[in-house]
Length: 381
View 1 (cartoon, rainbow, N blue to C red):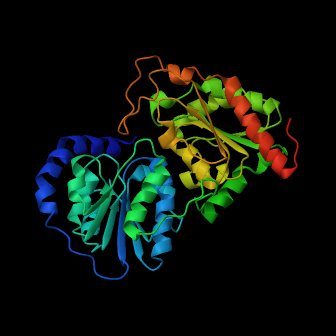
View 2: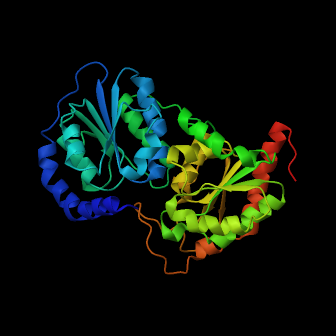
View 3: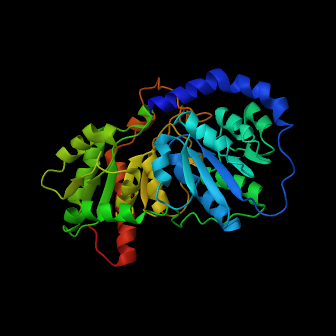
């Protein structure tokens, strides 16, 4: 995570919870019965990482479906703002961690409805209350519930898209529409052009493309790059061309994967694409492989079959449903260990991740490739 994100979490721990307890009685006096008719201005708050920002997109689409003429502003962090930029899903994006200017813009917004999508931390609920919006909706987790006018339950075993859609249903009063097999991320056209150029040479090999991301933002979710390299080499030897993705922090791991592919068709894009461009790349491949990280959720959102290496996280919460998703995991008594959105340092030697073997991942990816080839009439060895 970024330094700004770390500082926000520290501030939430030191200031957020005490402030919520103090502001609870005040919050009950803020707000009024909403005027008749649809809201004209909506603020949606989404702190946190890339995965959350991807998975609340169906909720945004439901708000647009219910109120096509309303203005929607998003309050995001720098680390997830790139997911929504250029998608047309909002009218304005403000940065949660950009300093007092963004906060002042929010407080002057005169919103009719504020939806706080944060699950546990308190600072976002304080921001929601400070807008003085007549309707303020959030999850009923902890003391933060006191600052909303309406709440919905939050189930730690419910897929996150569905949890966010619960907020949309509370706001609109309409049952949401969502098909777990339907892509829901609108890849910007400019990003598609960049992806087409980046994949031009490797496409000419005439092989199905497999994207591999050998990183994860949380250390205990990482799989050794040497094992990703073995997967990449095994799939390349079975007729695939490999696309290696990742952020700047993944360049070294990507180099390990690339070294194992000498003489085999591949391209290394780690550290060379924006989030939207990476999504556009993944939208063009036959299969995507990674641990539990933000780009996995983007891959699922653009409609690409995914193979997910799942360790300390809660599968029911973060494992995408539908027919396009496959998970590989090593069952151990201490997994999952993620609780209330926090994954602790591992005292068991990362056994849940290291128990996963390259052969398992190759087999699952091979099944996805075979299914895709069968649907298209192509042949895969």
